[in-house]
Image (cartoon, rainbow, N blue to C red; front, side, top):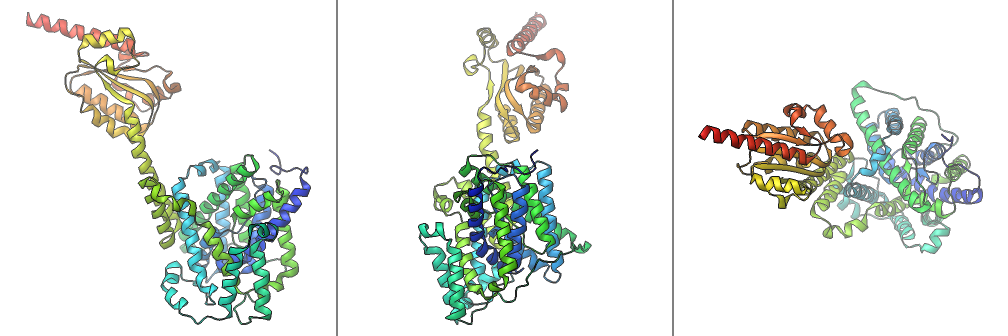
Length: 556
């Protein structure tokens, strides 16, 4: 394995320009995220430095730029509120979350993140955007930011809008206007968040004084925080760490997919998780807020020419130089200016494209998105995602059941049995309904298990022999195997004989292995198992002929 994934020096000029550009974009956002989290502006900057550097040199997406993001900041703000009396516990949770990400990558779980339903991802990302907007309205207008959660911030909105409004509100609204209305041509050259930060901060210092500002910022490299664990709080800490790890994982790998689309390359998801996890562990050890792959900064980096880990790590080193040399200048930045920048970030996080099409989407997907969005805002992310995944699974199971049951046929006449040969058709015509063929074609899962058993009950009572034809089955799971066992028992309890048509090649051997391992085949003696359906039908005919002969002897 290469030491640094995707590292080469053939694009050094593009990587330098990309890293510098990404750092310019990251500076105001890192400051804003740090303040919004409650940990302070420097915690945001150092989060961008540590996560950005280690994710670049250890991760699996060469062109990705990492740092604090809106979703991670929202969760971190909750964690800091929970452990406000002991900040060491809050940053221990960050370390634990990073360790979980390393574990996810080591267990090769990265690829499963792409299985997350789009309706769930859209719902919780939109919910996080709404949270950012609701929490930033108060500081935008010059009031103190809410530290009691979203619902409290909503309850205080009438008071927030009732004023009084001072210079802070003017600066905040101007900041929002700049990041919203700056033409794309200018934005590509000079990022609008940095324009807002510079112009509004200077106005706050020389023209519109009195707005609440960031205040004292410590200079120099941060001191290491010794991880602390209190046993009484451990369950809550683990839960919070899991939220951070899951959100950081989803956020990063979705950004990796975006980077792949731009660069026409393929990221290494498990390695990316290890890099992100190590970055977040280091961030937690130095009192910085956690981060993830940042979509906007990654796209800016790629468009500016960055394509290797050099650009992502350079972006972090540039921010480090800014922190060590220009930290005191950030003390005059008004909170309202950062709130204006974050309001635009929250707006951009909301999945407006999908929301505008919700009324045209299938009802199930629409309900999932709206439910996840609502729960994200009023409850918490884990509950929202958990409910959304369960809802999506149930909706998918219902749809799959309808499709799978179409491939489950109860056949007594040759016209309903396409795979049968000419000789097989003759046998079914001769049997005149006394042979029932249960034909499975394709893959079957738990979704259709109960429907299969229910459908058998509608097959009538005239058949004497049942042929279980699994030649066309490519996959069955435990639920289907046990459903087949129930069908076999029902048939045998009613005095009918069950024959099996399934070779060792069915489904690449998986079908027969599943039946064997779960003990289903013990209900069918070896002499009643056949590799092809014609042999099973001939066996059924012989049994009926013997039964007819025995009946004639009894009648005579």
